[in-house]
Length: 201
Image 1: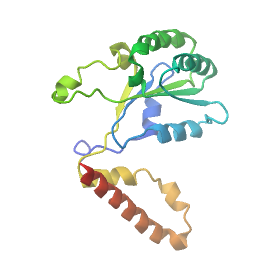
Image 2: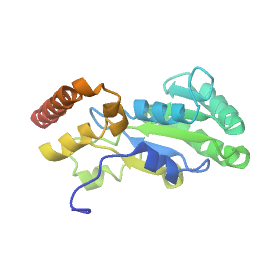
Image 3: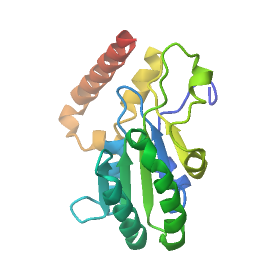
Image 4: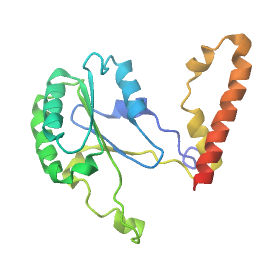
């Protein structure tokens, strides 16, 4: 079972593998948004948007200089920066690649960079050929830890994935008199969520 079933994604384990020189690269799929997990992980380390320790930028026209400036300042200060939807800025990605080479020299240990992008899409092409289409330059991909948190196909895996979002500590915080009812409601909610995800396919 260790290799037959995929374990639910753990942001803590992913963070432990990362460093100031290895950005995290999330491949986005319908229904998946890594932002809350990244924000929670950053907050647990004292990096929040409120104290300037976490900078979240949705990439689009006019955000190029903002992103480069944020990368440099966060690298020097040991903060976190998240650049979302970088597939929308394909012409700028060569500049991002050069920026990584520069900040590698100045980044302190606490610095983290998180990128997100949709996978390439080409209707009518087989999946193996689609993945060969260049959306993000190869040197950026080679530098990153790549994370693909696509929703599983089967009900059991979807149920485990939804239930894993709640920790034992969160459940223990519920008053003991209501804990049994809470667990039943939580299971029902996770089961309903898994069924809806399965029906969407």
